[in-house]
Each structure stands twice: as structure tokens, then as C-alpha cells.
Image (cartoon, rainbow, N blue to C red):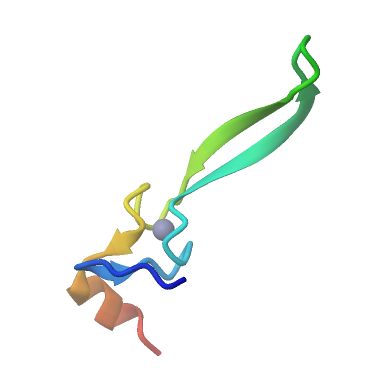
Length: 58
Ligand SMILES: [Zn+2]
């Protein structure tokens, strides 16, 4: 599914602005501990400004 947004999808994360990484540790209840990490390019918005997107185009 392609997300429809008013802005351009971030090239850094393809719109997946927030990723959850596993820390390798497990909580006492057995679940994996994860940390939310925001994309450094769009700062968690998933989109970039049109002008910035044009500059990033090959
Ligand atoms: Zn991004």
C-alpha cells in the first residue's frame, strides 16, 4: 500500500518515520524491549518539504 500524503515521502525512511529497534534485552515478562527511533531526515514526520524533495532528486 502506498501512503497518500500531501507532502513528499521522506527518502530517508520511505515514510516509515518511526522505527522500533530491539535493544537485545528482555523485560521480566519475556517481551523484547524496543526503542522508538525517529528518522533523522524527516524527524519523525515521514515526509519532506517539496523543495527539499526536489533537491534530493537525482
Ligand atoms: Zn524520514
